[in-house]
Image (cartoon, rainbow, N blue to C red):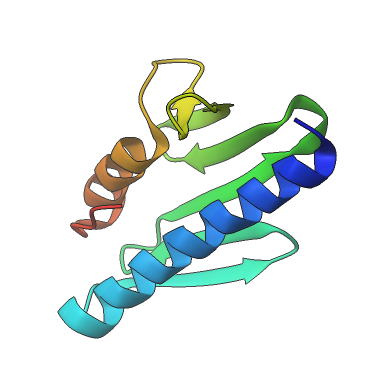
Amino acid sequence: MSDAEFLELYQATLAEIESVVEDAINEHDAAIDYESANDMLTLTFITGSVVVISRQTPLRQLWLAARSGGFHFDWEADLEQWHCKLNGQILEDMLSEICLEQGGVRIHF
C-alpha cells in the first residue's frame, strides 16, 4: 500500500467514526464530543476521559490512545478491517468497548 492509499483509507476511517459519533449525539443524545484536526480524531466524554485516534504513516498504522493503553492497528486488506497488533481485536469492536468503559456511552461502530 502506498502512502497515498494509506492516507485515503485512514481519512475514510476517521470520517466513518465521526459520522457514527455524530449520529449517536443527534439521535440518542450521547454524552460525547469529538474534534478532528491535523489528521487526528479526539473523542471527549462527559467524564473528562479522552480517546485519540491518529496515524503513523511510515508504519501504515492507525493508533488509538485510550485510558487502557495505546493500541496499534494494521489494515487487513482481505478482511477490510483494522486489526490490533496487541490483542487481535478489530477497531470497531475495541472502540465500542472503550466508549462504554471510559464514558458510559454505547456506540456501535
